[in-house]
Structure formats: structure tokens, C-alpha cells
Image (cartoon, rainbow, N blue to C red):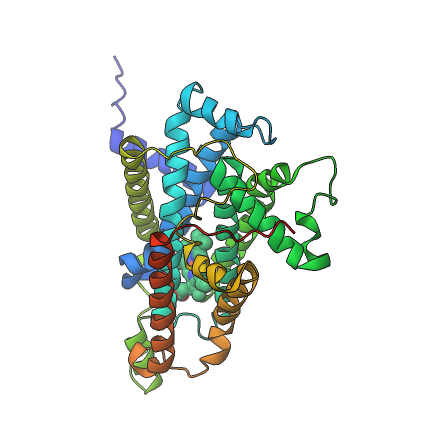
Length: 361
Ligand code: HEM
């Protein structure tokens, strides 16, 4: 009998991989990246991206049961918590991952700032990043409103009055803009469609520019090269290795979110009572709260405008080619001062009694 030798599994795997690779070009992902790109500081953007994927998956599930009308919204959240299959887990993981993503975005921004990675030729990518930060905050705000409890209702009241302060520019927040759809419904559309679309477009541009410029070299190496030293090594590792680390850290976020959901499931406050102001905003908005106490609701507009203008200005103010923090002492001191002040104001707000800011205008 003419017995064919059995194909070895290793060979079979290799052939299968070659067939897939021929069609999808996966081995092209093994392009060189510097070794330091695998350090945690340089994976924070990737971890944030993985967090967005978790938010998209859990958000799609939540959207199957959520109802974005003022009459039914809160009840549908209760339904998600108590009846919908895996609803409580999906809501909890969505909530906790959103908070973790907010923290990783800020840490990512802090790393870029500390290492001067916004400098030429990466100024445009810094500005796109500022847009991504605004989009993430917009997602947090709209997400807070659509659960439609007392905290949500007060947040919406603030948005409406802030919109009113903008005059004609704030038309989107007024009831007259779309008499057929309450503002809650439009904020829900912003949460699931407008902001995710905008965020995706910005992310695509962000990633294309990271690919185009490569990851910035270490500040000390970049400064040494400016002084005539050797050019920094652009290789040492591969993007596939970087991607594997990103997925690894991303899975840790998922595990932490599941654990937090089981220990501290997100709460749902009482049904909204018009005219009452008894809640405070989530932690990322808390630093603005004391300004509202001191200067009134107008602060809701000008404090974020000043902060974002400051972020936009960074690459235009810091024009020197040097990237080491030691050679950028003044700007680093300003950055540390602003960060410390925001933390201090947030803690202050957490310990003060809620005050009335809405004027009923
Ligand atoms: C909101 C979601 C964001 C995501 C998902 C994201 C993702 C990423 C990723 C994956 C990288 C590659 C390397 C790394 O992880 O450090 C990166 C690099 C970069 N990001 Fe972001 N980013 C976001 C927000 C921001 C923000 C808020 C800023 C600054 C205002 C920013 C500015 C930059 C710059 C300048 C680079 C190039 C850094 C370098 O070459 O060292 N990004 N981002």
C-alpha cells in the first residue's frame, strides 16, 4: 500500500498562516518600532484605544434595551440592570471602562507633554489629540445625562443654560431647535452616533500620523542627537510586539472593569425632580465646580475655553527643539501647576455642599 506520510501540524500551521498572510498581509505589521515604545508610558494611547473597543461592544449591547425619551429613559436603565440578559454586567463594564479610559487619556496626554512629543513634526497630531480629549469628555457628559436620574437632569440643566449663554451659537441646546425631539433624545444621538463618528475620524487621522512620523525617540536621545550625537535607533522591536502589549494591557482593563462591576456596580439615582440641585458632576468635571460656586454658571463656559486654549497653545508656545524636561523647565512647571490646581479644585469640590447654580433662565 502506498501510505502518504501525515502532514506535521507545525507545517500545517505554517501553511495556513502563509495562506492567511498572503491575503491579509498581517506580517506587514511586524515593521520596526523602537524598544522604548513597549514601555507603559508609550502604550497608554493603545490601551485607551482598546478601552474604546470595550465601550463600543458594551454600548451596542446597552443600546438594544435603552430608550432615549424622558418618559422611558430611567425605566429602561432599570430594565437593563434587572431584566436584560447580561445587562447589569454590560452597564457596569461600560461605566468603569469609561472612567478608566478617561484616566488613561489624561495619562497619555501627560506622557506626551512630559516628553515634549508634541514638537515638530507632531504639532498637528497634538491638536488632533486635543480634539480627541474634547470628544472623550463629550462622551462622558452625554453618557451621564442619558441615564436620566437626578444627577443627569441637573447636568442637562447646566448644558441648557450654558447653551443659552452662547446665544445663537448654543441653538442646538434649545427646545426650539427640534420641537419634535427632546434634548435628551438628541444628546443620546450625540452619544451613540455624532461623537463616536467624530472620534473615529480623529482616531484614524491620529494613527495615520503616528505611523507617518513613527514614535518619538526618548527625549535625552533626541537632544543628544541635536548636539551632534548619534541618531536615535528607530528599531529594536516590532509593531506586532507593541500591539500584543496593547491587547494584554487592554484585557487587564477589561478584567479590572468586570471586578469593579461585581464589587461596586454603578448606581442609578432617584427620578429627577425639577428645580432641585443636590448632586455634583463626575470626577473629570469636578475641578470646574468651585468656579461655578465663585463666579456663577458662566464659568462652565470660560473655564473649559481657557483650559483648551492652553492645550492648543502648547506646541506654538514651546518652540525650542529640545525635548528633555530639564531643558523645558518653565513649561513643565506651568503644566505641573495646572495639573495640581485641577486636582486640588476637584478634591475641594468633592468635599463642599452642593450649591444652586441654575438660574432658570
Ligand atoms: C482620546 C483618545 C486617544 C487615543 C486612543 C490615542 C492613541 C494614541 C496612540 C495609540 C499613540 C501611539 C503611541 C502611544 O500610545 O503613546 C498616540 C500617540 C500620540 N498621541 Fe494620542 N491618543 C488619544 C488622545 C491624545 C491626546 C488627548 C493627545 C494630546 C493632546 C494626544 C497626542 C498624541 C501625540 C502627539 C502622539 C505622538 C506621540 C509620540 O510620537 O511619542 N493623543 N496616541
